[in-house]
Image (tube, rainbow, N blue to C red):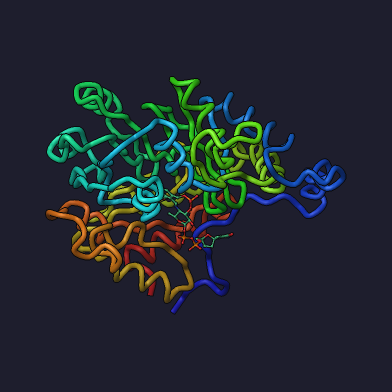
Length: 354
Ligand code: T4K
């Protein structure tokens, strides 16, 4: 078998050298201000707010969703996608709300105004579409549906860094597997409500203002050491994206136009995903990649209703989410991946490598 000698990881985070990182951390280490929204968090929050939309930086992408729901005062049920990472569901539960699933469109693998409309009841408080892999949801259609029904609209934009910001809120994950990252981290952006932004920033620090708890919040703060990392990563994102475009082009040179291969490679270069159908079988490809020392990930398998924790929990059937979960695979995608390696991985996907 002609595999790779060393394992090829799925992703490789942008990282400073130890010297560069210690310089970024110097301010925090010399003053002893390590957390509770010090100057490094303040600076990162400002830079990201200018780049994306006014936002509240926080500890991770899961709590970003919880914060957005609480800051917008959502009550009752929240309709989201049956094809997402389980964090979306757990964030809704952490906000004390009830997740309700909608099936996805068979082609885009995104929930749509039509699939969501069927799930709206008098108990619905919000719609929470997910920009899966960086594919954007129908923002105009959802804005109309939300307005017609008096619902809040929050996008899970964990995969949508640097893409347009929609709705009452868009949330981000800055996990180490993301192009822009702070090791662990996230943010809730509020493009249209200064009031919700102020509330989210207070809620992430226990809901305390001065010494009084104004409303029950949580600890969702980012530390200064995480912010220092983010401040180093942010100016390096464009260069990494330029390299990732070459990696994507190398994959496409092998996989483009092949029968049974749909390429999902949005412009923000967060993920490179292929959707495999007849004559290819996703799980067979996953095993072949593993056998050749390539680490891929079956995002998002299984679909939400099929996880052991959720069996029997959600009413109805979600055939298109189940299909998407059986067919998608994220391939190694990072700037340091040589183009020849991407082409070789492409040939393994097609079964053209022994
Ligand atoms: N909404 C959506 C739609 C999401 O996809 C996510 C998270 C969230 C919300 C919640 O955001 P967070 O609360 O996580 O901020 C990853 C991430 O943990 C998770 O953030 C992400 N989505 C999810 C899709 O994937 P794993 O379990 O696949 O990561 P793992 O450990 O298998 O690592 C993947 C690759 O990255 C490996 O090749 C190793 C490499 N890696 C990983 C880590 C953690 C590194 O090189 N360094 C590292 O530190 O979950």
